[in-house]
Image 1 (cartoon, rainbow, N blue to C red):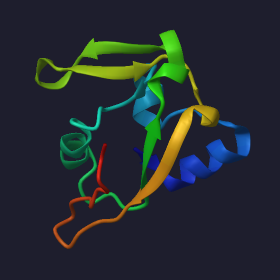
Image 2 (cartoon, one colour; image 1 turned 180 degrees about the vertical axis):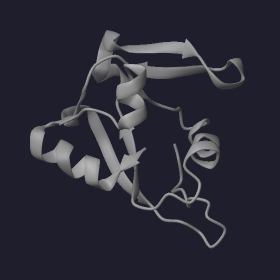
Image 3 (cartoon, rainbow, N blue to C red; image 1 turned 90 degrees about the horizontal axis):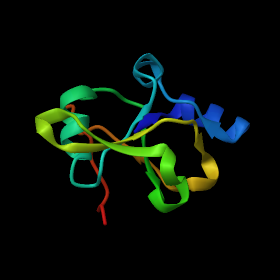
Length: 107
């Protein structure tokens, strides 16, 4: 997930460099389809202007590392910038009345 404004910058440059937390931690945070709803609820509830970015992990290759994080689960972390060529889709995540994001079907 990322802010639409940052994604617009990525489209212009060809690369997503990550948000403030990503830059602070030294990698771009990713979540699997099974993890992303909880990630949004814990860290981004009420944040408008978000996009759900779906990537092809096979195209990213060895720069994507699976590391233990929240609840001792493995999360994908990208130790590089993300080429927009590796993005399958970018979908708006509207907010519901409760401040939770409304997700599309995740396959």
